[in-house]
Image (tube, rainbow, N blue to C red; front, side, top):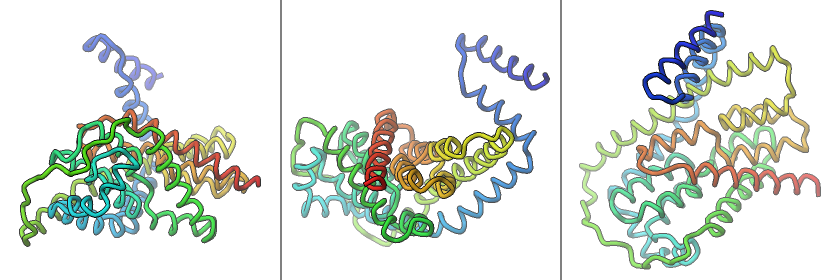
Length: 319
């Protein structure tokens, strides 16, 4: 009863001030109540998230983030676009400077692709529409994560299949929904700052905020997933429903839940998780873009890619 009264008060105050009901205060109060009711589970989720950050995320992403910032500071995207930019532009109808984020997004995965896209956009080397479209296929699950995590339960062969399926659906989306007009093939000239040793400290400090953001969301969704596990344990729902919800929320927990499913649906649902990436990753990318790029197209693009990856893997499992 007390919790219901608190919710009613929050909704009333929010409506009285803004003349409309916002979902965010409602979610915040619900989360606050769950943190009180399931404090042990929340603490366990936070500890698990911190361990995941220090054991996997920071060792694998932080060096990539520093190297990405160093290359961007040296305007490496211009050098790369001069070599292969024409092919990239002909295929995707985007600025040749966005070839670098695409390569980074395939190799190291998110959020490096969004960091590179935002840097190029701020330099003026691509338009806002080009940057928002590039976000949709330049932010993928990294090859190291797929081969490391998925190989443990799916085997080496299936891990490689999952990687190439994700790569295929992202390219398929990029070509299917590419802009109609081909931009000028020559990259826009910019002033070079020079690759002096002075860019190293800045590259390191610029890497701290994205890594802190990524780890913060991993910790937040860590205790959210633990609370949901307890709720679903009390309600005793289907394992498949719970696995689907986890894949939508957070990729690591989602993949762990798919391992307990029937083999016919385990790999297809894993393919969906890898291509969709989870709400946690979506929020990480939104933070890395500093809210200057719209993620509406990005969400539906990743959902489209996730469904396509699910259907492709389901076809492979059946036939």
